[in-house]
Image 1 (cartoon, rainbow, N blue to C red):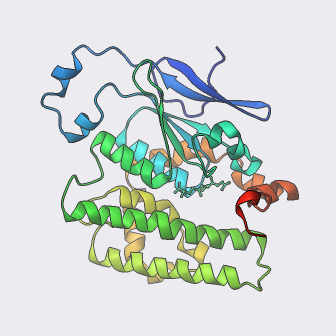
Image 2: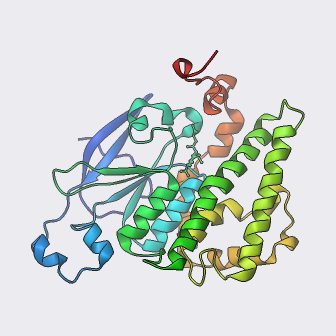
Length: 301
Ligand SMILES: N[C@@H](CCC(=O)N[C@@H](CS)C(=O)NCC(=O)O)C(=O)O
């Protein structure tokens, strides 16, 4: 069995392959790890468990994060560091089109990173999840942390989490897209998304003026989801001096030991992302920007 090719391998469990993606000349492994036999029966173990333990009975399977150095991936990395659970990372080079491999598409239907895989109990298929918001919810419930279990703050956390995944990420992403490719519409698209980004800064600044954290009194997956997207206001032509609450919040997160570890762990995942996009040949960029991927059968002429 070939050795799994993962970076940042932090696990001490023995690995087994549960699947394999062949990406060009490279093989990427879907990793599974044999669960250690428990010393007590599931029935006895369930007694006295809290809700998250009941939802996820059994041993912790080793977790693999597939991704690269983008904010959507780094939020998961930050969460894993906050949880201090064993995990490993597997870089997937989206600039070189590895996300379009059919084997990867099977676990990420929209061909995007991050994807998180946790192996199941011995003999069961691994669980895999794409969409960074869903992954954060999974990890929060899996480990019973960074998401209140009930009450208004639970839904406040969800509100700010979904605001990030449905507004901040996609809108900021569109701005970056039009900034990178230049805007044939005389800057219309770029300016539109820049305006929306500035509005997002305004909303978040206002919220953090009323509350120490996005979800309320406690640091949560809403903060973890939003941090990497908003830490550099000048990238969206927003003046730091006009968002003191946001900057206070950024500094508070940056000082967390998990954030420091995350920044180190991100180095391997980020690799040559910027260089790759800068040096990419035209046909590769066409592919990256999805301009060659119109689903023909679906679309009206
Ligand atoms: N809604 C998704 C967005 C993920 C996403 O946009 N991922 C980008 C990198 S940040 C990607 O994989 N792009 C490759 C592509 O679209 O082909 C999430 O929050 O996980």
